[in-house]
Image (cartoon, rainbow, N blue to C red; front, side):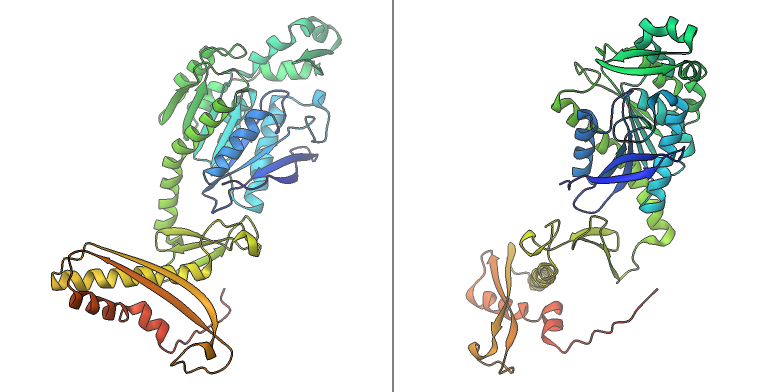
Length: 410
C-alpha cells in the first residue's frame, strides 16, 4: 500500500529549485527509484503518477520531479537542453543519497529514458535501468519542431507548439541533441536494462527500442507494450509497466541485499533490530536474522497499520512457541497430532476481578490462549498436551521474573 506523495523541493544542477514528489510505501522501503518524465511533460503526468504509485505499493519509493523550467520547478525551459536534464537527474540522485538512500532503480519515459541512459553512468549505486518509449537518440525529438526549424536556424530561436502548448526552443537545444551519441553510454552501462516499448508507438517508433537493445550488453530485457500509446494514457498500461518493472527489479535488488547482509549489515544471530521506518508515524522495520517484518499501530491510535502492533508480536511469539512445543512433544511421543491452532487475546483487567492473583490492586495483563488440537487423540493425550502448552519456553519466560537492561548505545 502506498502513502500520500510527499512534496519536496531540492536544488537542481544550476542552483534552481526543482519541485518533486516522493511516493513512499507504507511499509519498509525495499529500494529507491528515480523517475524522469517525458519531453515537455511534468512529474504529475498520468503515467508518472500511476507508475510511481504502483511501485510504492510494491515497496519501492519513487522520486519524480519537474525538470528545470517545467511544471512547478524554477527556471526557463528555453535555457535548458538534454545535457542540463541529465545534470538535473544526477542532482536528484545526489539529493536522495544525502537525505535517505541513493536510487538503485532509474526509470525514464520518452526523452527522460534517453536521459537516464546517460545519467546511469554517473549514479554508481543504481543496479537497474528501465526505459519506456525512449528514443535511441535525443535528436529524435527535433521532428516536433519541424515547423520552426528554419526560424530557429535563422533567428536563433522560435516558438513551437507541442501537444497544444507553446514552447520557445533555442538553437543551443538543437546543437546539444545533435551532438549526443547514446551508443557508448548504453554499451558501457554495466547495469541491468529493461526496455519497454509499444510496437504501435506513433511518437517514438519501435526501431528505437531495437537500437537501444542491440547496443546494450546483458543482462537486458525487452517488454512489448502491445497497443499502448506513447504516453501510457490508459490506466492498465501504466499499472502493467509498474508491476512488471518491480518484479523484474527485485532480482537485482535481492542480489544487492544479499551483498549487504554478507558484509555484516544484518542483525547478529539472536539479536532483533528494530528501526523506525522512513514513512514516519509509528511504523518500524523489524529485522530478525535474514527476516524483515513491519511493525506499526492501528489507525485508530495514530498509526498507519502497516504491520502488527507490539502486543500482537508478543502474542505471536507465545502462539508460535506454543504450537511448536506441542508439535515437538507429540512427534516425540508418536501421537497422531494433525494440526495445532492457537488463538490469543491480550487485555488489561482489574486484579480484584481475578481469583488466585498475587496482585490485589490496580490492573494486570491477561492473555487468553485458546488451543485447537486436531487429530484422533484420546482424552488423556489432549489433557497432557494442554499441560505441555504451559511449559513452552515463551510461556515460562512470561511467567517468570524478567529483568530488562536498557542502555544508550552507539
